[in-house]
Structure formats: C-alpha cells, structure tokens
Image (cartoon, rainbow, N blue to C red; front, top):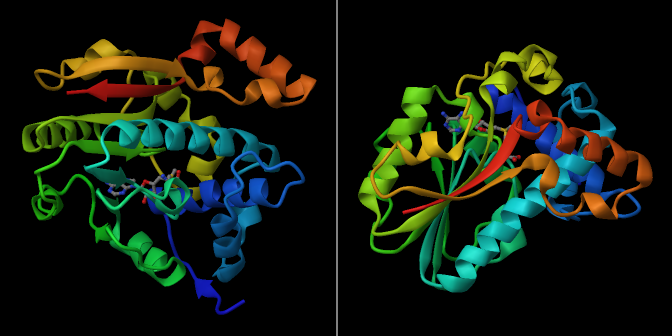
Length: 272
Ligand SMILES: C[S@@+](CC[C@H](N)C(=O)[O-])C[C@H]1O[C@@H](n2cnc3c(N)ncnc32)[C@H](O)[C@@H]1O
C-alpha cells in the first residue's frame, strides 16, 4: 500500500465513497459481477470508515450491476462513434474510463467537485485522451473548455438526484446547444423516490439532500428541442439479476411487479 489518503468529505461528495465501496466489495467477492479491481485498490488506499457509509454489504450487487449497465451503454455509443467526446459527470472515484478503455479517437472528461477530483488525481493514473475537470457540473464555465467538434456521450451515474431541477435542466440545455449530436445516459429517481430520501441510508449518513425527481421520458424530452427519449428502463429490469441466487431474483421480481418500485429508479437514454 503506497499511501493512505485522508478524506473529509460531506454532503453529495461523500456519497461516492459508498458506491466506490460497493464496487470494491464486488471485486473482492468470490463471483464478481463488475470486477472493478481499481475500486478495491482505491478503498485500500483511502483512510475512511467505509463500513459507516450507509451501504449494506449486499448492496454491492446493485451497485455493480448498475455500473455495468452504464458501461455497456457507453461502449455501445463508442462502437458507433469512435471519434467522440465523453463527459462523465459526477464521476466520483468511478474508474469507468479504465474499464471501458476507449480508443484513440475518444476524448474523455471526468467532472466532479474540486475535493473529489483532487482525491481522484492522487489515486488514479493519467492516460492519453483523458482529463479531469474540478467543478460543479452546474457551473456553466467548465463546458467552454471542452471542444465541441465531435458527438458527445454524457454519462452520469447517481448524479441527477443531487441537482436542483432548474440547474439540471439548464445543464442538459447547455450541452444540447453546444454539441452537434449526442446521447445522455443516466439514472434518475422518481419524485416519489426523492420524497422517500429519509430511508436512503447512504444519503442520510452523508448529510446530502436529493432534489430532482423525474417521472417519465416526456418531461426530459421537453427540456430542449430535438431531445428524444429512446430508452427508459427500470433499474430492476437491467441485465444481470437473472444470474443471481433465487432469493435475490425473487425480491427483484416483486419490485418489477410493483409500479411504485419499478418507477423509483430508471435508466434513461436520450438522443439529440
Ligand atoms: C452517488 S455519488 C456517484 C459517484 C459515481 N458516479 C459513482 O457511481 O460512483 C454522487 C456524485 O455526484 C457528485 N456531484 C453531486 N452534485 C454535483 C455537482 N453539482 N457537480 C459535480 N459533481 C456533483 C458528487 O460529488 C459525487 O461524486
């Protein structure tokens, strides 16, 4: 172990320790789903009480499957757009760029608050075509640093719910206005999911607040002209659950049958 990085994060920034921990637990399990060994290395180098992040050990399964799902949508976009820009917003300590390992035609930007990016830079190696941007995603200034000459893929996992609705909508509009074409892939909570944030232990432990709830693709399409919702997939319907044990499959099967649960967390893919 080369060093121990002390972290003093609170609020939304602290929640990324929980998802990092989930991926690390998956990587050290006997049958990893994502096998993000960089997450495991990072957890070993960070001086924090990961057991106190509010993440239950069994949550590693959903964390790993959800990350894998957005990795797959990212790879799909890059397979048809080998010359592209990727904006990975609210990246936390997610090693997605190393997992996806994009080709030389891709410029990849990881964006998060300065304290998160500072930690990221200490933990992960540089690579060609890859930059980090230390800024709130809602600050309009950072986007002007990103060249606008290629189609864009915006990937945001566990971010939208932390944004205020007007700020989130303005961010989407700025990106649509700036790039010639592209896709957004992200997860969002329903408004009911936002109202139920008191039972979200990770959010409570971090002292974070959730704001933006999305109930369907039509309200996302209304953000900017030319924006089309091509996929809206319940988080309980993504691939991978079928490979799990009977108990887990039964729980997910029940969640899929209950409209309130099915709509609580949804993966959206928007095109413009
Ligand atoms: C639940 S964590 C998810 C982190 C990462 N995407 C993952 O899956 O591990 C939420 C992340 O969103 C970031 N975030 C929240 N609001 C943000 C904002 N306005 N600007 C930049 N990052 C933000 C937090 O700092 C944190 O890293």
